[in-house]
Image 1 (tube, rainbow, N blue to C red):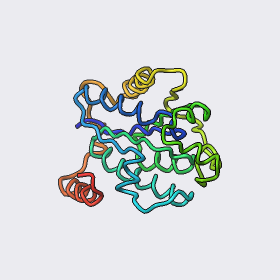
Image 2: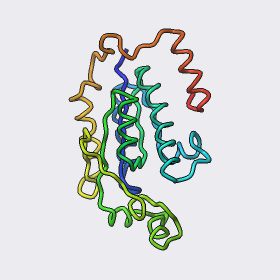
Image 3: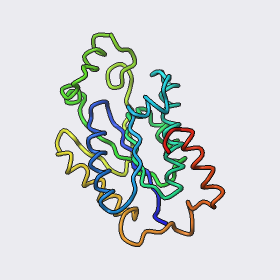
Image 4: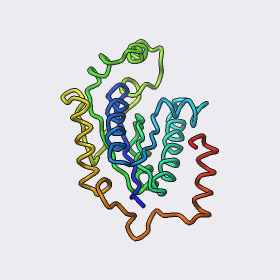
Length: 205
């Protein structure tokens, strides 16, 4: 059984998380691995519908994403999460919960993010029409020791994706002959059924 892992993309709104993660998804699929993707906007629509943007609701949203990532990772899936996840403590919680965790800091100056913002969210936040917007009137806490840093204002998306892929190979998550070390992360048949049931209830199966 292949070793499961989660690649966690974090960064400011419009920093390029989704763009880079989509390329990484295609690259991982090209190795023959199945990939599950939890994008922040999609999760908000389905898994976390009804949550607002208070710190408590943001933390709840990330905990839900981390929970699903943990289940998928333990069952050998290659999992990608792309969410702003602005608070360091909750990202550390996700790391502890998931285990095989690769944090990718999608670094980009807020000025560049604003230029990319086709929805005009930054403009609305600066005008006071949106409250608690990350990078404007709500903080983004940069990762202290991410496995990968990509600078999307200086790199092409494909270049950033290759940095992530190189790290995954370096850490042993990708490559021929992958097995779960010592059987870790392999469930019994009964446990797998319980996990499948949970994922079905969450709408991912």
